[in-house]
Image (cartoon, rainbow, N blue to C red; front, side):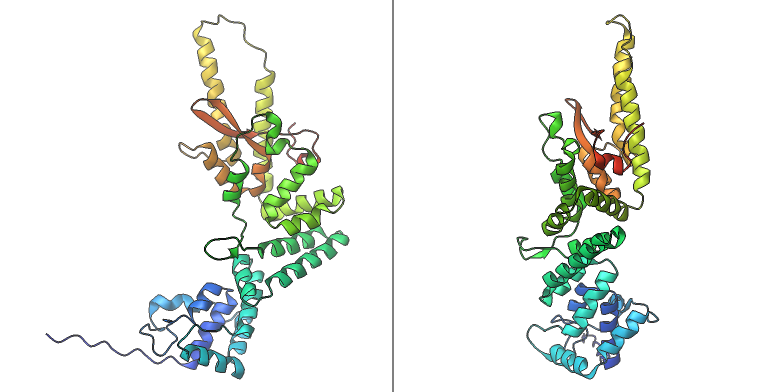
Length: 355
């Protein structure tokens, strides 16, 4: 039986190359951009992969009516860029990415808040640290002008460009990754109540909070060098910028705090210690305590452990875990619940103080 002949793939035209490059640059997608220059890239003439195949449609996802796309396409069509790209696609060894397109890609990634992708692109250009410092400097100028919205935006971008050179197997962007960082913050069970993150002195609590939200140590050092009132204003804007639904959490938080206060101030019932009612009362109290994490989150996690609620809260409301702590009910039950310093300016500023 003769083998079925494979139809030769259609030639890769310059127009297709330009469109693929322009699309990945517009989307700020460094992963797909590097894929276009990989040894088996469908743009290569000697590759068995066909760029016209439907499985490679993700290389052409940008809106062609987007002005950014037209700018990227014009850049890709520049004779010097075209010549460089052609040489790299014909090269047998690792390709060198065109710096003009790479810079435009990084800037678009920042515009789209794809900071980890932008960080990788700037790092390849060896200007990541310079760009990060530039955003921090602009944010500091905004702080001097008391423009906290612009200051938060600048620090948010600068922190998003942070890099972890200790990452394995190769350096990678840090990223916010609040779910993992929240678990680390609550990994050790406090031996004393005052060891809870939420019960730290206001100055230390604010430094921990900024370090958790911004990730980058340099950013935290810059901000904590400011006056306390500036730090508080910045932190308030940062929390509400990261979490536009913060007010929904504060409403649930205050409600839980008020319920806890009421249960702690109720006078003990005068009854026979051997009566059935005492057991029922304990069961009701246990049920109320176990319901606290779901009340804070706004929904129940079936059979959810305390750490699952911490992860979900960190994802939904990143700053929320800064005002919570672990609490053991009995040998088989542990929850997260509010811990609050009533005199803390941080608590007051974020409107977490219960009635």
